[in-house]
Picture 1 (cartoon, one colour):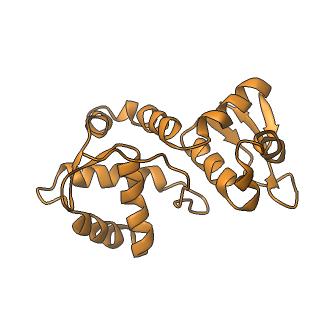
Picture 2: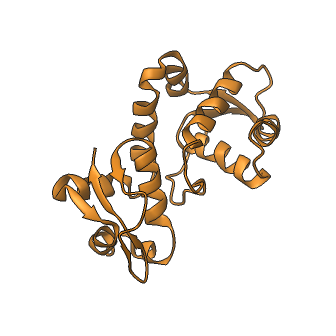
Length: 178
C-alpha cells in the first residue's frame, strides 16, 4: 500500500473549530459500523450528516487518510487503522492519539511546539518571524494560523480567542503551552 505523504496544508479550519474533532471521531465511528466504507459513501454521509460542502467532506476524508486513521484496502474502499480502532475503543485516549498523529504527520507542528517549549508564551508574529527561514510561505496565508487552530483544538496550547494586535501578515495572539 502507498504511504501517505506529509501534510503541508490543513484545509479544515472552521471559524470556531469546536466541531472538527467531533466530526473526525464521528466519521471514524461511521466507518467502524458500516460494511461498505467506500470513499463515495463516506463523503456522501459526511455531507448529509453535517451539512458540509462536498469539498470539505473530501478534505476530512483526505485528512484522516494522511493521519493514518483510515487505510485504503482496495480501490475506493477504506478500513480503520489500528490507531483509529484504539481511539474508538478508548475515547479517553482519542485526543492524545490524534495529537500524536498531527505532530508526526503535519509539516511544522513539531517546530511550533518546540518554539512554545523554548519560550513558554509567544505572539503569533514572533513565531512567524522565528520560523520564517524554515517555512517562508507561512507569511503568505493561513499555514501558521491553521496549525495554531489545530494545536488549540487538540489542547496542546492555549490561544487567545481575539487578536491582541495585527501585523501585515498575521493576527497577533498571545499563546502558551498547556
